[in-house]
Structures are given as structure tokens and as C-alpha cells.
Amino acid sequence: MKCDPAKCPVEACCLKNKNWISSCPINKVLKVVGWKWALPILVNLKEKKRFWELKRALVDVSEKMLIQNLHLLEDKKFIKRKLISEKPLHVEYSLLKRGKKFLEIMPTLIEIWGDL
Image (cartoon, rainbow, N blue to C red; front, side):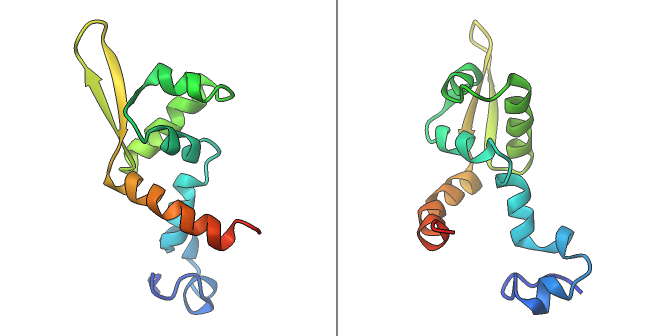
């Protein structure tokens, strides 16, 4: 049984589907944005930023954790990593369409479920 996004997360989809964890679209999104640093990274990337600008903005994140989250968000097409070849060499991160769209719906999600 394949997960039907129109029915998800209703019993007909997620609760009866043995493979709901891997096939549910909502769960797929939560696997990415549910990471502790994913949302703060996305919010900070409303404007292009270099790695160290992000690191300074997110003072409590370790360098290792920031790199892991950036790779995850890049793999899932939320952000773009661009190598800038001017000296000194540096990397710039920016939002892709998926990341921008996700940030657009965040106020609605907060309005609906913010008091949970």
C-alpha cells in the first residue's frame, strides 16, 4: 500500500500501512526539518550566507553538526551550496525553491499548531 498524500496522516494511510515511516510524505519532511538545527539554518538563509556567517549566527551549534545539517538540507534540495572561487575561496549557502516554500508555510503551521 502506497501512502496517499491526500489522506495522510489519516488511519487509511499511515496507521494501516506497515511501511508508513518510509513512504509517508509528512514523515519524509519531518526527517529533514525535524533536526534541531534545520529550521534555524533555513531561517538564517533568507539571505545568502557564508559558512562562518551561519556559524556565528547559530552560536550553540557545533561545526560538525552545522556541516551535517547543511549536507542534509542540500541533499534534500532545500538549500544550495556554491563554491566561490574568488580569493579567499569560500562557500556560500542560499535557499532553493523548496526551502523558500517551506519558510512561506511556517507561519501557517505555527498558527495552527503553535499552542500544542
